[in-house]
Length: 447
Picture (cartoon, helix red, strand yellow):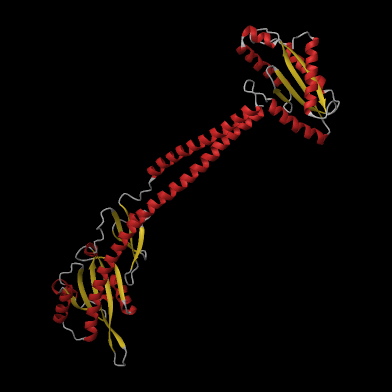
């Protein structure tokens, strides 16, 4: 009986845990997917803005590169351009553009033309190949044959700039091309960023860095430590990266996740409780069908079910099954004198004592008002019935405390052994019942 209750509790608890786990994990999975989708939407929103910022930045840079190409074409077609011609042409392209700090044209590696002229005329005649901080970029532009970018560099007039250089080639006597010089354009970074409206979104922290390892030259370098949205900026000869994160950092929806998880746990717990209650109710219904509601012992239906199992097992193992039928002596008088409530308490007390006197493999059942049955499996002819009789006598040798202290309670019983005394359970039960009544008559008790 204790084992049955133990397994019953384990079953109810296991069903609660299993259902809770299934529902909680399923809702948690849905919640996780929902939060991930929210995070993905936020990241997608930032990505769309960064794409637009990158496009503006590239547009502004390439607009100045187009100017540079125009100047290079001028000198390729007319190597005899004068300073005044250069000034007019450069001013028509760059005047009013505050991104362009200055423009210079080198013949070979020596500065020959500058714009604006007045503020930069002192640089005319300087051989940049002799200037240590300029030499490598000058030679790289000469040898690359394309556009090169250097920077950011600290500008003499203040601020930081990017220097773009493009080699100029003119036809050579042998029908090919030879290096003539190069165009240099200095772009003021602050104004370039302003023209590209890089900080047009106040909800974002934006930064730009040189991906070749030359550091961040626009914005806060910490942006690149915050899992930013990153995009390459297509700048010739200069790999740039633009990155952005929300001003307050990424929203991980932690509070929302915790609250939703708690709600999911509540729902899962409610469903699991209902299922566990159904399992417990099923056991309760089984109890009503197979167990005596007063004593908790197996009833007549369960007794016969167990007898059938014992009969099959005993047949395979060459064992015997003894059946004892017990009936309390004078129980009706106790009921009449003390009431049915006292009689019920006495029946429970008798059941507890009998249950403690039988083995775990034996079956004790209440099959009637004050009638009990004990089923014992045993080796054939091993004297078990005598020992069971002694235990029954010992149970009733001591008075009971209900309905009052020291109440003597007698019992009459009889037993029969299958298959020695009958081929089926009903025959054995009837024989044991008959012997019980014989004992009752011998003792002079009323039937």
